[in-house]
Image 1 (cartoon, rainbow, N blue to C red):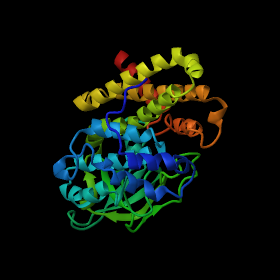
Image 2 (image 1 turned 45 degrees about the vertical axis):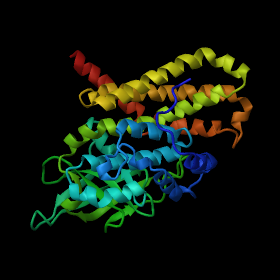
Image 3 (image 1 turned 30 degrees about the vertical axis):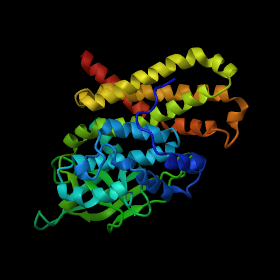
Image 4 (image 1 turned 180 degrees about the vertical axis):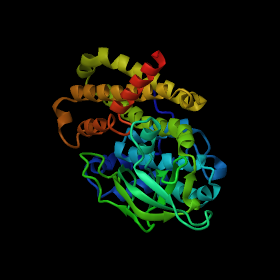
Length: 367
């Protein structure tokens, strides 16, 4: 079977996640509870320097923490990814005042951090243009700020109780795009109702629209989005890969717990799959730890694609070993994990987008 996660969550939050995993996936009533549960376990502080309020460690530790949560509930892990990725943005931001003002509340789970940079990551890879636009207001440049407009159709962790959302904006007057932290209560900022998802329904996933919102430089995460995005992309995708790693491990563990006859029927498929999962996970953690993905993003794309394939196969084999019991609700989570696994290929950047990027990369390299 696959290696045991390097970071395990405490028994109490793990039990809460196991108890409510089905409800978190299928309903929205517990959406407000996820952040406090994860924060209470100190999970958002993993990989954050102690002098910034964290528990030290590295981004690799945070990836493994997300994987551990994903083994209990992909909905909670998805929220964790959004929160921890936004924290990563603040850790890399040159705007020290913004970090000092908001990082403590994010680490405590008092405020949600929403990573609205999926559009920006696709922009960085020339997949789509930016959907948000900033216009410099007249007056003293140090205080006048910008008028912000645009819409992002899908952002997770837009907690109704309060959030900051990161989004990239092109500048009408020219210059590189920049990234702002958008407060939920700014005039001109509107959150839609929760999207009608088929699963992960407690993830506070909604659309965000800006209509004439005004923010000054104190809300700017970076004035150079392309350079910033290239630096944080390994963490963005690496933390996201924790979703796949944790879900695949949980499916393989369920197979291991099946009857001897069921295990024997799939053994020839499970063993190489477990080895592939371990190999991809090592490549992921090594690349993030040593910074090699900064110069070779294609290698990170390949890992993300490979992990998605492993998740798909692992969950299908879990269905085979579970038999009819797995098709019943509240019977070990097999049915829920099939729904969770269906989300892995489409979370941005999607597998289709990454495969197209790799094809273009190979064509360019060949030329």
